[in-house]
Length: 313
Image: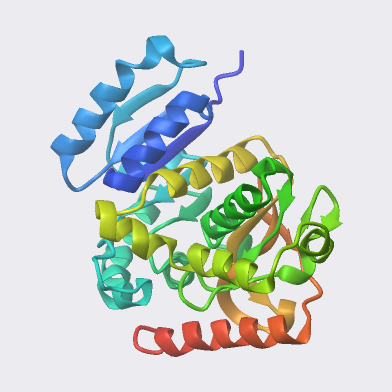
């Protein structure tokens, strides 16, 4: 009899964490989901509330409040804990406070004997994913950040909305820092296999309109935070997509924060790039052939991250 089940441990049940747990339940991704938070009452309440929705879920999921010791038998530890981005703050403003928080969290997780895959969502996600690898000593392929998965989703949605095409038929990437220096890879963007450049010609589209779409993608978090204080539904869905790709060994291409070791001409940096994700984590990085302008913007994004990291590493 097979007793092995997929267990996901969630660290942090704030806006993003609780939204992730809700989406996990609705999609029936894992057999067990353990909620861990410094605010025990909040996590216990979330577990109770989510369990009351089980009769309406697509499959059974064991959801419970736990401790760091429960990470020992987890396949994936998802980290959403940390200080939130406040109005007027950039993601990079959170570096020092969240790096200190993460050191304590990783020490607790390692003490449990955890030997699975880390999935990091807390901002600044690229730097904190680097921190998790540094603090844990795990192989690079088993430490993954959410990277630009949400930015790419926003990009695809806005392009689909603009051209009145189902967003699932839009294929386009945002790469680089999950933040102000990210960039669109226009040279590889297409709709149903037709390059965006051709869509521009046949749909009377200006480059100015497309540039505005990218700006709306890049600044989306600021606009949402101004209106409702935080972003959480979109990133929660992105995290669930990543979790599914890992647990179901999908070999899916997703724009995650992955460790570069010579790819794109860069080294010793976690940053958003397309990568093939499966049960072992990042199988390989997809190295797009960027044009000169894109190469320069990507290098700038790398340099900004490395400069910011100097204060903590």
